[in-house]
Amino acid sequence: MTTENTDTTPTHEQFADELACLRDRIDHLETELDAKDDRIDDLERDRDRLEETTTTLREKLEECERERTRCEKAVDAALNKAGTNKDRIEELQSRELEKGAHLQTETVDEHEIEVSGDHLEKFTKDDGQTYFRLPESADPLDNGTVSLAYGDLLPIQQLARMDDDMLQSTTNALPTRLAATLWKARTDSSIGDNPWETGGKGIKDYIKASDLKHWIRRQEPGTSETYAKKLVSRTIDAMLDLSKHRVAIRKQNERKNGLEYTERRLILPVDAEIPGETSTAADTPETAGVLG
Image 1 (cartoon, rainbow, N blue to C red):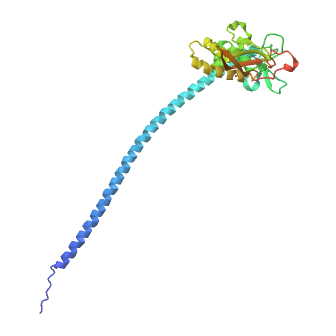
Image 2: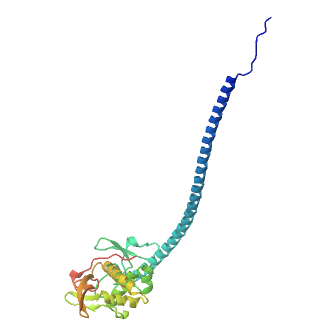
Image 3: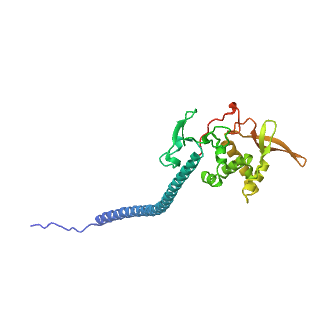
């Protein structure tokens, strides 16, 4: 019986092929490892970025929470102030109704306002608007020469009739309060400090801007000259608006120390329709709304 040669020892070529395969496998694994390292680096950078973003968002959240708390407090304060202002307005309306005011019905909460007799009379004027008044209301000007309701007065006249406390509670705007006091000084000798001068050629009264600045500094001690100049313009603007432009601004050439310059004047024309200060039928003022 013949025995065949069964030697299975790998040949040199087989070793070489296997080695080449192993090297290729190692290269492939190293490439994969490098790719995974790169991926890990990318993920770590993403993680760091997300951590920074999370930190930023947390800080923003905390800031939003603080802002929300501040807003809630501001809203609560505003609601409280609104409630207080409503009470003040109702008190002012009660006082004015007691004085003979005619208030537009849309501005009055008839179920909350307290007046003598607990009764308001509703009526319609020639302007088509509906008003509340106390029965047999008196003339708010108290002069008996003209039949006017409080609502017929110009807003500047309404403000000028208020005492200091009422004026302070009605408006926080200093120019508005100054305008009301300035108007009152023109007709009320009890004010004492009247900067108005008697005019001529169609001008009933006037006041120079420079005199108004000094008057404002007397009214508001401690006011700087620079701020007083700003208040002059703001007070004049308030006067124009609240008088419904019954007053006007005119420029006048002035001369001082041999130098000529132009100065503004706030004037009240002779023919201006001022409720209670006009007497002819043609001068009947239009009905104005009530402040508040």
